[in-house]
Each structure stands twice: as C-alpha cells, then as structure tokens.
Length: 211
Length: 211
Image (cartoon, rainbow over all chains, first blue to last red; front, side, top):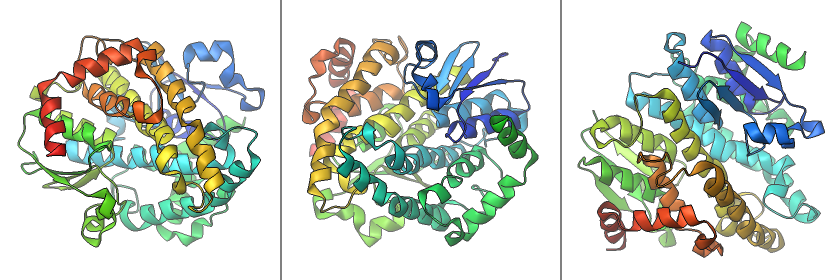
C-alpha cells in the first residue's frame, strides 16, 4: 500500500476529480498547487515529476501516476473501505471505466478545443482556433445529451451506488457554464451537480483549492 | 462471468485492441464487422447497441461495453488465466490504465484530427480541417517521442510483462505510417511493432478482419 500520496493539481482543471477521490478515500494525502498562469506545469522541476507537463499527477511511494481514469481506479482500489468503485464486479467496474474514459477521451477533449486548440493547429492560426472555439457549445451539448439520456442513471451515475464516475462527472459538469451550455437543459445532470455541490467533501476540497 | 461475447469492430480502427484482447483471452467470442464506408455505425440497428455510433462495442450477457480502456480491463479481469493485466497489483494495474488512457485521450485524439476533424469544427470549413491535418505528423511524433523515451520500458510496455497496453500500443503504432511518421525514428516502438506482428494471435485476428 502507498503510504505517502501527493497530488499535483491546478484549480479549474480535471485534477479536481482525483483530489475529490483522495478526500473521499479517507486516507491522508498532500495536495500541491501549480500556478498555470506562471506555467509551473512546464517548469523543469515539475517535468521531472510528469514529463507530460499536465495535471493531475499523483506521487506515490512506488512512482508517479497520471491520467484521471487511472488515478481514480488506483485510489478506489487502494482504499476499498471508501466504496468508490464496484471492485468485486468486473462488469460494473467496466461501466465505471467506460464512463470515465468517455469523459477523458471525448468530453474533456471537446472542452479543450475552447482554450487549448493550439494543441491541434498552429498557435498563430487564429481562424482555425476560433472555428474550434465556436463549435464547443455544440459538442459539449451533444456529449451531455448522451450522458443525460443514456449514461447517467440517477441519482448517481451507476444508479443508487456512488462511484468515482460521480466525482469526474461533477468536475466536468462545472465547465458547462464557461462553455456556454446551460446545465438546466439536462435535468439529471443539473440535479447531480446540486447534490455534489452539497457534499461536505466537495466543499472542503474546493475551499482548499481556492485558499 | 459473461458467457457470450460479441465484439463490433471495423478494420483499421482502434477496435483492433479489443479484438486482440479477446483472442489472447482464450475465451470463445464472436466478432461482427461494420462497414464504415456504408456508415453502418450510424444505422438504427447499431445505434441501439451503441448510441455513440462508434466501435469497439462489446455485447455481453449483462449489457454492452464501450471505450477501449474499459473493454481491455474487463477482458483481462474476466479471463485472468490469460495474464493480460497485473490484476493483483493496484499500482501496476494503474500503470496499464495510465498508458491505455494516454493512448485513448491523447494519441488517438491526435490521429483523429487527420480524418475526423469535423468533430471539432464545421464540416465545410476546409481551411480549419486542413490546418488540423497538417499538424498530425507533429502531434503524433511528440506523443511517440514520449512513449519511446518515458513510457515503453521494452520489450513490452511494462518491461518483461505482457499486458493489454501492448495490444493497444500495437493498434495505434500501425497508424503512424498513414500519419506520415516514420516508426523507425522510435527504435523501441519499431521493435515492439515487429514483435507484435510476429505473434500468431495477431496474424489470426488481422487475417479474420480482412477475410
């Protein structure tokens, strides 16, 4: 078992999901904030931790873990008493991973075309960057329509059972307003966001990230 | 345990990784080919299987699973005797999931900007689509530089231990030539590709996909 855990994060990023998982796990952990405005994620010090220059990065006794879906399952498996994933059921666990993988490879990617389009076209190609930004409300709406109608069982992603998928969905639902999508179009998602906002662990982590 | 497994795939897609996992598992399975040229992935019949209109989609006795990283772990957990993942070690399993998640959320996404840029800009915006296509060799080179230097231990992704990450890496390495990236720039990746090409399970699955 990892006895020392340190999560690198930045406010407003997908690292919130991993931060929440650590908080819900009940385990001791540290959280280290990076200042993206100062490009700390590109500093030589941090690139030695995570050569991708991204967050989240979770430093454990055995090495560094990156990628939200991987960190979420690692925390759930390391602290099974927290009940963050259906570890005893390969199919249900795959449903959790399916949901988390969709968020990382499709929904987060949709969102990233608003502010990080330079990943996929030249950084000075303002016409293409604007074309990407313009479509973000549509792609996010399409993804959340699928989540609302086909994926989120309610009240939690898996139905009655809470899981890491709820932490990750909450993290990305919080981006909708900035992406010019009204979450009220999606009643189950909006209800999920309200329930998560009210959880003491969520309030605690958000306060610590802003402190 | 799922007793009936049917994988929907199309040749040339990332569904190859899941197809290989099923073959390596030793379990009986069916594979059903979709004709993307005829847009079968958008047919009402298939949208009832997978509303995302994508492959892979694995039909099991308990429901449908999508998203490559989720399917790969499901197959590994369902058929543990095949040794496709370090199921008894949460950290190593997280390294497998980290690798697979990077392939799905970053490398596959890079590649998709060549032929599926219409996901992120309007389909008639040929200037933006071309700008995306133009950067694909660069983004794929950057990703494979990271894989070569930091992620692929060799001979397999985890070192001496074979895993689903090898099936998935092989699937995406095969795209490099079409993305105008010379795999020989990456000696470990090129060696990995050769080793995988020589595996009888790989030959069998590729032949069946082309039959």
